[in-house]
Image (cartoon, rainbow, N blue to C red; front, top):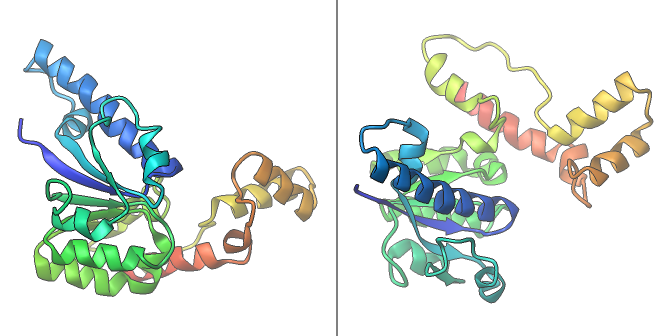
Length: 232
């Protein structure tokens, strides 16, 4: 089975979960294929082809201390550009960017696309500000920029707009784009909870960050609607 090499930029809550899924689910699927090479499972077969070759984090020692089973020998570095170009580990086919924030994530995504790596990102802030530049760069280099996880990843709406509605004229997009806002509005509307109490509850349950500014003041929703509007 030909493997697809992956560099993982960021190893926080989301990045470590992606790493664990690729390592553990991929190993389980390979084991299943050894038992029955004729079995078919499209998602699992895709995961089984992925191999994480490098992980980028500012705190390399902390990341090394909690690598999941199957990733013990992966190169962990704080030099993203060297990971992208293949200087510290095998050159990746795909760069998965889960660092968050605009910079240096924007610089690293651009570097990956210009080094003929496809990019998968959940970074709505970067896409909201530099989406056109990054899409044009990907197209010019013949690689992919995929960002389903940046907006309504569980719906999924990006794929629907890009593919299923390609022949339609979209005249409006309506909805609550932010999960924290959605939770707060629901509690206020259906349970009569006041705003401060609903926000505190959202923080306690992990829907809202300790600093919820981006959510409750609209920054998160603005980035998401920017992405969807540009697609529409």
